Amino acid sequence: MSDSTVTTVLAVDGMSCGHCERTVSAGLAALPGVVDVTADAAGGRVTVASVRPLDDAALRGAVDGAGFTFVGRA
Image (cartoon, rainbow, N blue to C red; front, side, top):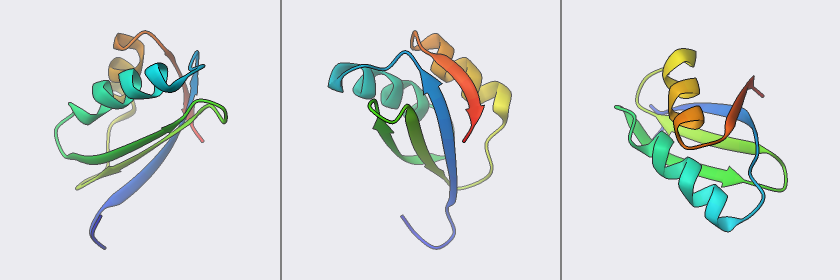
């Protein structure tokens, strides 16, 4: 990640394992501008690095579309 990236931390419900982490990460990584995603099932958090700020509706769509629940920004 470079100094010009925006870091967004999300609270996500429903992740319980590594497969869940990979699934939600793939959904978020598909959003335009996302350069890195790190999911933590145990903590219920996902950290997203992007080249510009991300819209909550897009984040919610990606998380919910992957089968998890977007709680909000952490």
